[in-house]
Image (cartoon, rainbow, N blue to C red):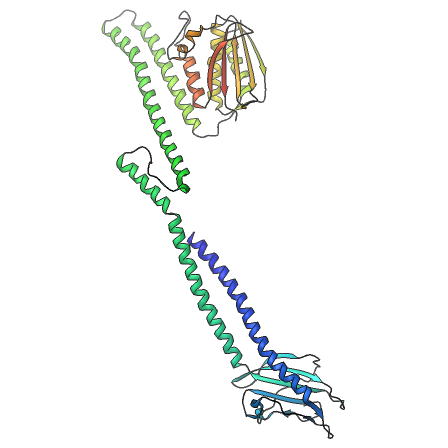
Length: 436
């Protein structure tokens, strides 16, 4: 920010200084030229041709410097074929007049024909009454005074703009330091978090950085929530594995003759618990990328093809919006739909109906999975989502399917609701997921 401010200050002051220098020096030169042109006009007005063809002034020019040798102000009248008529101030010198052209208007230029005396020259060609000769009236003045004025102006401009630039740069630096001071306070607050073990920034800070503080506190809260979820699921996994391990240990200690069957059953249970927590961990990791998206219709068709091979006698129907895209990884969407459709085929009466819909009010995607089974009583619908909860113990399973569905859906910001199907009479599972 300091370099950008310094760059802009330098560019603007340099441009402004050049423009102001041009304007002031042009004004000084114009004033100088106006004085020379006034003298030239007075010369032409006072000039007349004598009887011998020479030019003379009918009145004396008013500037005393024309009479002082090398005074710095000179005039000269020159004509083709005539001797130049110089002012006394020229003494033994003659102005070089470029007589190869005609100047109907006053012509100004700089000349260095005299050593150590730069000149500012104005000349004009005139044909006087009573003469056919082209006369050149020339007035020259020492340019040192003009150059000195211009140098003084430029010196004043340079020092003034240098002081102005330094002041602006100093004010810009002070403004940057003052403007960024809230960030230093935020840094100090973060250091205080690390040193004191606090979990939030509570120090009152300026309004400009308050959104940053809010986002930082939100990030801390999110990190705490993730850490708490990790601890909770680690504890849940340990608790879920503890019971099967205890059963196996007791059976092995007692030399149970059915030990092999127990090992097979309990290891399957442990494997299912591990798969559940791994699925949840994968979903959390994929959600962190924020770029998840999956097409619903191909995912449902893929799951239906797989489930149809297992339950060949069941009838599966699919209807709804074929273009729905949800903000979830395809693998996790397949996991959710696989559990729901497989449960519908396993516990239903043989008919499964899947509908894909888009809610117009909030744009969410809703997937309806219905079956014609016995359904789930209203008082049991909340408990069925608990890990290990099973209403029909006569069929194989671990009771983790709906728990996986709920956990993974909630990770992506979705919901799962249970209701009664009006068309088939069995269970209706309403899965709502955010659209991509």
